[in-house]
Image (cartoon, rainbow, N blue to C red):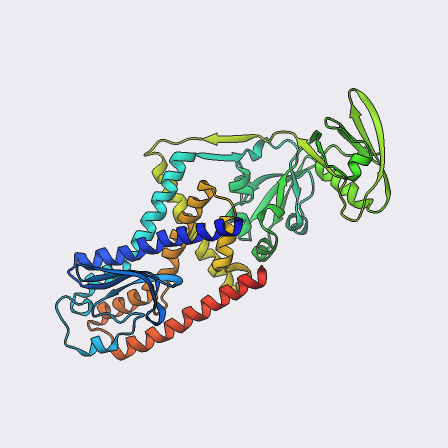
Length: 439
């Protein structure tokens, strides 16, 4: 059931974005009197259609291949490769008969709509949900490094004060934000009362792709008490009770959860004595830790200092706009790191399976719309890349035409379209195969 929910969210989210993107081209073309022959969600490869109808001279439908969508604009060399139409005399309602500036707007229409959608989504999210984050400045016990944090030199109890000289106020946004996760940042930390700096490796994104950002660091919290004892576990045999406060393992004090788990891992397949406080009395519970390195208790921790900000309707607009364009900034930085060799392409790029996993197996509308907003801006960026067969390729050729004062030949455009098509197919196969290997 969870898999169906995940697939349903992906299909819904991408369908919304595809329809709106193609609507941008459609409306721009109609505004300049250009005939649009088809408007399709998904591709009707080999002429196979799931659904179609005609309205005012345009065929609307749904194809069977869920790899995007398209509008077929009369008199334009596109993925349909309708070369027969291009051999006829240009008609006044065709794309090729219009001035270059009008054709440029038509090609930018989808990208513009994606940007508008991204801004509106993040605007409404800021207005509806506000901001909630852990107040990093109030983490009295600092952080606990995960797999990635240990490799870069973070130690339990370190307090992360600054990122690139700027005070780190919000844990999720600043400490685990893109500025750190993209690599190259300098952290100012406080360790045992002294400040020092840690430089994040430029290739850390490879590690983040393998382990996720939460393995960089998490807030360090004190354990309060046992919240649950699992049936049939070693903890039940040791006679743990709900409400017990854990004090030490084999005489080593374990105030924090990371200390407790470290001591448990050190004693796998060995006898242990765990000291607990129960109703004002200190007790010693004896047992053995098996190969799972777990005892079988669920613990209650101290609450984290969470701050929440709410925004008015108009106040949310610049915040949403900033967040939307941050997606494009991160994409640009990510591609820059791939080209420089700091990050491996197979680590940085995700396809449909990777996107589906981000949506998750349960419906969470905050997460759903956050991902839709992010994907809308990412689609705008990707479509603007100067690759033939993408909007950016058409834009590039139109700009060349406007500069040199005459259009590029149909023969060149047809060949460029074929090259671009194979580039896109190769990229799709790479990302899909990469997703499957990761999975």
